[in-house]
Structure formats: C-alpha cells, structure tokens
Image (cartoon, rainbow, N blue to C red; front, side, top):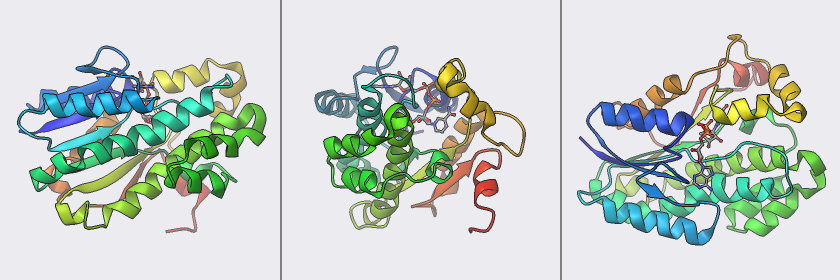
Length: 261
Ligand code: NAD
C-alpha cells in the first residue's frame, strides 16, 4: 500500500480519486481549501509552499505518488484568470518541484496531473501564454490573455492546461524525473459532471458554450469514471508509462482532430 498526495481532494474528481485510493487501502494526504488533511490556498506562492511542506511532514513513511487535481474552470470576474493561472499551473509545478526529492526516494513513484481536452479543442491560445508559464512568469501569462476581454478566463484555462501538459512532457523524460524513477503522466478529461462543470452550466454566459460542446458519446462523464483511470495510472500497470497525456473525453478530441495521431 502506498501514500499519495491528492490536491483538490474535497470535490469532484480529486475527491473521487482520494475515495478510491483510500477504499483500496492506500494512505491519502488530501490538500484543499477546506475539508482536507492539509488546508491550503494554492493560489498564492506562500500557500503552495505551506501546503508542500505540510504534506511532506505528514508523509512519515514517504511519498509514493501524487495527483494534482485542484483547479478552477473559466468563470466571471476580473480575478478569475489570475486564480486559474496560479492554481491550475503553479499549483501543479510548484508542488511537484517541492516533492520531487521525496518522490525519488520511492524508486517507482507515479504522478498524475489533471490536464483537460481544452488543450486541443480551444483555438488560438496565445503561444506567449504558454511561454510565460514555462518561464515561471505568472504576471506575463495573465497579461497575455487580457485582450480576450470577458473571454480571458477561457484562454487562461486552456493555456494553464497546455502549460502543465507541456511541462509534464518536457520533464517526464529527464534525469531528474524518469532518471529518478518518477513517472509523470497527465489525464485530459472532457466534460465531466462535477461541481466545476455544474457551475459553468449554471452561468448564463457560459452555459451555451458548454451545451454546444460536441461529445460523440452523447453524455457527460462522471467523476468516478475518471478516478478509476487515475488509480490505474498510479498502479503497477503504469510502470512502463511516462510522459503520456491520456484523453478520456467521450470522443471530443478525436472529433476535433480526426486526422491527427
Ligand atoms: P471541482 O471544482 O469539483 O474540484 C476542484 C477542487 O479544487 C475543489 O475542491 C476546490 O476547492 C479545489 N481548489 C480550487 N481552488 C483552490 C485553491 N486555491 N487552493 C486549493 N484548492 C483549490 O472540479 P473538478 O471538475 O473535479 O476538477 C478537477 C480537475 O479537473 C481540475 O484541474 C479541472 O481543471 C480539471 N478538469 C475538469 C473538467 C470537468 O469537466 N469537470 C474537464 C477537464 C479538466
């Protein structure tokens, strides 16, 4: 049995993953704004440092893996893009940087990052947003989506998910990660009926876009289904897997990119 840090453990897919890991006998150290083993605000650098340190303190028998599920979707308000960039991108890469040494000690650690199929289904996400994220420049990334006005947060969202996916693929293959036996993979869910998606469906400005989003299988996914994929990606079945971005999205990515591979 292993010990896993799970961010976003209080709701939706993070909670479903934490529940399934615990039911299988693993130890979970959940991180969230409330209702978690570690209560922390991942939208600030200080909050991320405190969360990372607290998890390491609680991981008395080591850390066998991590699931980075905390995140926010697009929504109204001027501060939304900032929150998305801080939590969805830096809430992943800062925590993993802080946990890398401990994960390496396991010899066979596995990390699953929550990306999204918005990576491939959102057109014209500025390259400058991704470049700024990978350079660690939150302010530049936030500024780069301002020109989209009331749609800025949708581009911040897709940018944050492209950013974590690219960060994952670049790092997965390096001596620091693959060379230390740490498998870095990401899951790209489509529309999954969680409180995050429900909030978008309840927002008159966003509901139309969500309802018009084509899903070939004709239904929303469920948090439990995605959690099963994540638990599988943490299991020995994934020993030979690193750097993969796994789409579980009812067919939307294949529909948008039928001729890609
Ligand atoms: P959710 O809203 O149910 O859960 C997200 C969790 O993140 C919440 O518990 C929330 O409190 C936590 N969180 C948000 N801001 C935080 C902060 N500042 N500090 C600490 N924790 C914070 O959402 P979900 O749908 O389960 O989403 C999980 C992940 O999956 C997110 O990264 C999301 O972007 C991604 N995703 C969701 C969908 C979808 O359709 N639901 C699709 C693709 C990707």
